[in-house]
Length: 315
Length: 268
Image (cartoon, rainbow over all chains, first blue to last red):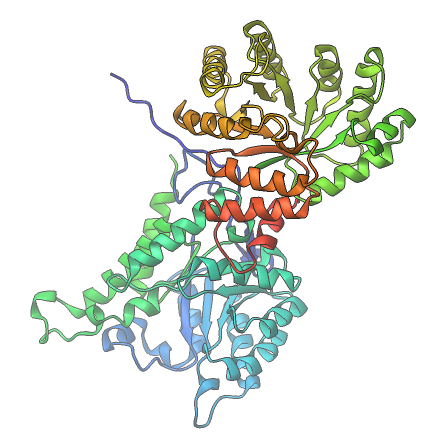
């Protein structure tokens, strides 16, 4: 008896969003199929890895991760450059945190200067995140956005409660925007509607559904991504945006990565755990439909690049 | 939900007059309004605007006039083959053929016609005996339609079975009978064909047409209807339809679900 392969075809496409300009510009999205099902539709752009760079050494990182990153971690510009030169990343994901400090916060101008320096030093398209705190972020977005004006960066993130300043700023300076929702598909859709109602083009939005790491509600976030993608391929245009996932930061703060070896000897080497936890988290989300994964660990980045290359190979 | 906009029909006074005067703007405006309101296809019918012998020519003119203003797919609507062919000859985008009966000879001829034109096909559950007035005859004729499509290799996603909505004012048991038939036919094939209804028929000669139309539409949708020939310019009807899609889990809820649905339907 012969087996007839069951193939599903879709009539709709995920929007293509281009980040950056010129030769280094990166386009994500454009799928007409669920991830990597090359027999069922097209996946014209591979998922991309963005290197998380922080404006100060993250105080939650393990010694192993700091060591793997190297001395460059002390200078965000050098850190980003190392990402390009040694780890081959195609996007920089700059995390601004210092403007939200209670004591001696960085000024919006400091933040803008740093973002500009990194953009210039790496020549790569930039993703820039605020600290996730409404007030300090609201002061910083316009200044950073203007400093990077015309570079078609990806700035985030806009939420249901707070999207107006960032949306207006991104429209004015020609950037793309990240629409954030708290693992809630209904709010994800609502944010996209609110942002487009302000005049943002549908092909300038990347959605961040928020995500946990392996062991921290990954299955739930996975199902949200899957459902988002199914709705989009089925014709829901307000869901048809590329998806960004924070694979690195979420994994690196998990107990399984941070616990010392003498606490849980059966868990094995902590240095190894930091790599596999992040890589496993990233592969799961890539299979659920993530178009951009932001990552931390150089070795996990290498593994994920290999993974993407393997799954994009249609020969 | 697939909406076939019903307004480009010579039975409406404005359209009838536009056909007689050969005034394309009236048709183009109505076409655009329906598309903007969420119509997936635009039904095109000469109706009773001109004498029978002039209908093929009038249909050809309508199709050309409408296509000058929009690229939305058209549903060529006529019970007469020569009028149907006159319309199909002029269409630019894959159209819908509305309609054939389940009478075997006509059915196989129209399936072939649909295949030639890469068209969707509406098939009515009627035969030489007319419109069936019970569930059994409707399901039997729907079965014949599905069999004929299967034998001809006609794809089910292009097949629209119309179980025929009859006016509640004239035959009050009929709307309920159609719902029973609709429900019974849900498992007829996998993947299933579409089920469509000429919605406005149910409210003919009543005084609360919009209310009856939208209430029946929602009831039909709950029983498996996924297409309707209806008036997309009836905003309350469209709101009810969008809300039913939501409650049937075919759309993802958001607080702005009405505008989100409309934005999703807007042609790019």
